[in-house]
Amino acid sequence: MDFQKFLSQLKYHYKNNLPFVAYHKPSAKSINGLLQNSSEVQSVDYLQKGFVMAEFSGSRQTHFINLKDSQLIETKYDTNSFNFAASTESNWIESISKKEYEDKIQKTIDYILTGEAEKVVFSRKIKVESSQDIFQAFENLLFLYEDAFTYLWHHPSLGTWLGATPETLVTLQRNRLSTMALAGTKVASDNSNEDWGVKEKEEQNYVTQAIVNAIKKYSNQIDVGETSTKKAGKLLHLHTPIQAKIEKTDFQKILEDLHPTPAVAGLPKEKSIDFIVANEAYQRKYYTGFLGEVNFPQQVNQRKTRKNQEFTAVQPRIPQTDLYVNLRCMEFSGSHYNLYVGGGITRDSDPKAEWQETQNKSQTMLNVL
Image (cartoon, rainbow, N blue to C red; front, top):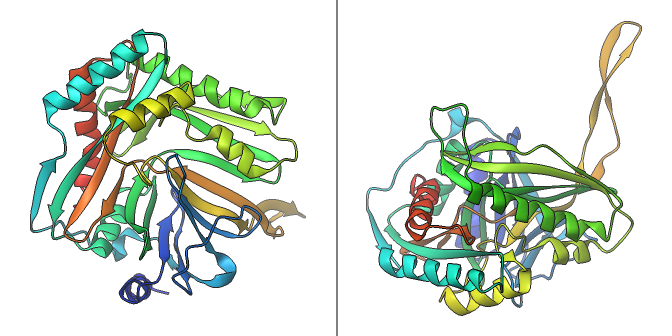
């Protein structure tokens, strides 16, 4: 179907208080939509096919749009079909002042220096009063961030969220698991030889080692790739790919060990989460949680040759799970949007630099509005 018809189906569901999700996977040729047939809140079942939306931590509210109880719609990803439009009105309201945030960052550094933690991810919320329509905001996301996982998710009793995340939590196809360590942030420049400081490299190492340690109990075949610089919009991050062949196990247990990673919580996990809950002074909800397809059938095409002629062999559809960390996101609350931004704090962090990092990260969503 064309994009405008795709949007009209989303709007119909929204108007009738029915859950849905629309999303575009990085560099994919299509945009998918799942339209739930009822307003029921469904628990996730990792043996079923569908789409999961999970909170950061704590009781971890999850919602599962089951494929068998929903309508699957699809449209072509084509930037020529999108109409980018900025909001005519907007007003940025900080939920915490620059000084207050820097004081909290210093408190976090002091906590780390006691030896209780090596890293804590601290965040803040920005309220933006805006006339921007959520469907136009989603269209803007699609136009701006082709290489991110972009989405619009809605449940009448759980909220409405949009985002453009650069971070894969996990991809699982049969017994092959892929994930990544993503940490360190800086604004992209014209310099092709980007230099990273000790703080960023140390933070990246924390994340990489924690992910490897989490996977070790399920695999003795783990491959850690080379660390490189990954671009996400106007920001750069350190990126390390990690792959493993896992033993047969409960996928939910793997998720519980993997998430939240040190990239969104800290190290050690439990103490970092306790510090975050006690000091951030707001609930993250779905920010830094995870979302994505569960057991979606993926058609694999392979190029083969026969008598000097090349042809495409279509293989059977293989179930695949693709989950993403919910970063660069915002929550729609009627008359305004709540933007969520944060950064990894270590003993070498500088409070003023951390404030600026969150300012830089906020631009991803502000560009949409």
